[in-house]
Structure formats: structure tokens, C-alpha cells
Length: 217
Figure: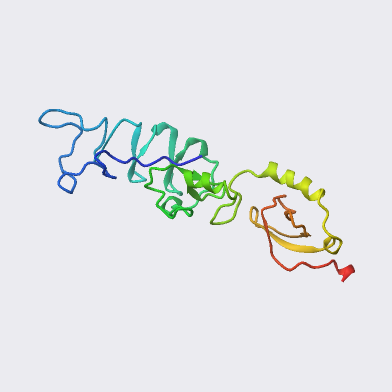
């Protein structure tokens, strides 16, 4: 799910049509002389002219966004417009849209590329998110899983069960930290992955040296 995209105006200007290098104080949708229509959509605040894309001006965002307006709501804590499907179903991070995309390092809040909201609450450009999934599954900022991995974790359960470790590693224990729930646990070491005892995720990192149980030391 994503964020409402910012509108770019006509005439090649990011913020709309400019007159003589600056905004005209009397900007309006039609020419006073011939009544020609400059744009199907006009915002008197942004002085934005554009084709009709169901745009609306969000006072809280301070810019015009592509709608329709009734499909979005403004999250005051995240400080951006989000799809109605995310109301009450996303993790809020204060002013998250004012951060740059951690993949391309470009602005998100005023981007024409839609944003994707990760389960952890961080934002990526949707195109950057799709590219990221080709190489990994974790948020580049906090390492939390960027999508529901439950089905893959259960497949990994089967692979671990069918792949015994060499004798010298079979009783090796290791402390791990889960990137999904932040729980710490001690589990049996395995090259394919080590499952969190709290949430059963394999999105974990070794948090200590491997060691044998006390009775074998």
C-alpha cells in the first residue's frame, strides 16, 4: 500500500506555471483576454495547472496530490496522505515522509513516484521497493522483513529438517537477535538459518559466538 503521489504541473515546472520566473499574483485557470483554459485542474494555493487527474490540495502536506481525495487520508503523525486501506493498519513514524528514500536517496514527500509503506513504517519509492525485492526482503533501515515471509519460513523449516549438520556442529548452540520482533534467544546453529523462538522468523542475526552445551564442554 502506498502514499498519494505529488502532482507536477504543466509547462515543465515542478510547482506549476511561472510568469517571468516567478508566480503571478493574478494567476487563474483561464486567460482574462481570450478565456482559454490553461489546465483542467488549477490550484490557487500552489498555482498549479494540469490535466484532470482527480487532484486535490492537501493543506497538511502543503502540496497537491493525485487522488481521488476520497481514497486517501492524511496521517498527522507520519505527515503524509495514505491510502484509506492503511487507516489504523500501518505503523506510524513521525514525519517519515520527510526522509529520503533509503534506496535511491531522493525525496519521497514531493516525488511523483508513489511510495510503499513497509510493515515497519519506513517508506520506499514503489519502484525502489520492487527493485529491492529482486535481491532481498528486508528494510534497508531497520532490517525488519518488508513483506509477509510466513510461507517461506515454513519452507525453510522443511529444508532445515532435511539438511543435518556435520557431527561436530550438531549440538552447537548460538545466541541470536531477531530483526522482526527484537527478541533474543539461544538456538541450535544451522547454516541454512536460525529460527527465532519468539516469532518463528528466520530473519535473525548471530549475536554471540557458537558454543557447545555445558554437558559437552
